[in-house]
Image: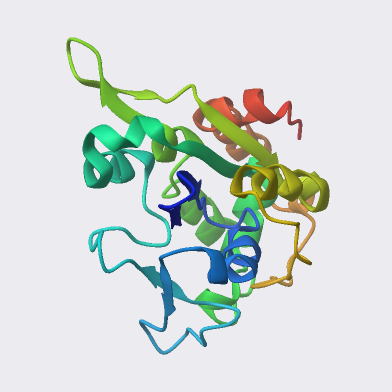
Amino acid sequence: MIFEDRKVIFLHVPKTGGNSIQDTLRDYTEDEIIISNKRQDGIERFELRNKKFGNLRKHSSLQEYKLALQNDFYKYQIFTTIRNPFDRLVSFYFSPHRGEVDFSPKEFSEFVRKQEPLENFLSIRRGFFNNLKPYDQVNYLKFENLGEDFKKLCRALHIDPPTLSHRNISKRLDYKECFDAKLKRWVEKQHRFEILIGNYKF
């Protein structure tokens, strides 16, 4: 979500409370909330489009924002939400957009191994070799403390914090019931960046 007049980007990593933030701030952005498929209702689940930056989407990566904004990218403050990746992956597996889901250890393991880590969303191309590296000028809002951390984003937007809506809530198992030792180690390695940033533990 881009706030062009205020020079702020909110980067929405799936299942980190982003729908709640984007729904709450919809009147302050140049983005438009739309319905793009039959599982979306425009309230709990939706997509974003921007008339000026047509290639941007609800879950666009920071590199995609950089390509859209070109040299203006570095004028923007970047905010994103983070969440314990174990909890986030379970929430994603049981997400309402996937319909009714019964837990299957095999299917869950396959699903988890396909999901992008936070690092991929926050990496941009830079340096002599133009390699993808995580951008270090990012303000993190923790899902576990979202009510308070949301106020940081509102201060950057120079608005009084509105009441934060609660959208796209999934009914799920406790994440500790879903990971065997092997899958737990895989997540600890693959998602080590967000575990370190958020000081998360299993």
